Image (tube, rainbow, N blue to C red; front, side, top):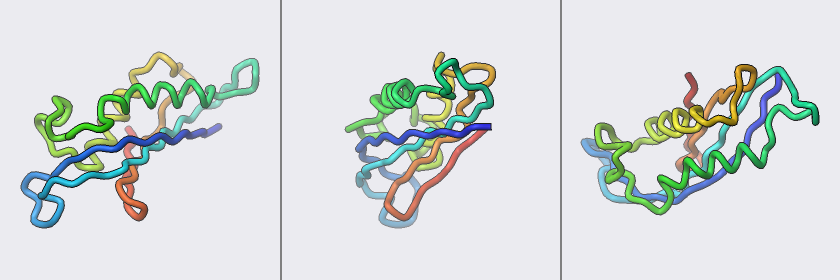
Length: 123
């Protein structure tokens, strides 16, 4: 089994509705996202998946969130844009990409909200 990952980032603002504390106010983060892929079969070049291709697909997903007010996005119309919900949404959008196969799957998405706080989502 092989596991590879790429990182990308986006900047966005949000607030957590119903939260009792500072996060209930509008604020922003420089979110760092890590996409982790697992698989057993390498291609003819000896790669599980090309880092460049994986990062490009991740960046396509993140374009929806970059420099946006997350609470206004349709993606978060029914839920708070918490790090947990952001991780799940990014996972589902990236997992739907055609770059994955039966033997190479998106394993997890890590969302780092601050230098000391992150969440990992996997299905």
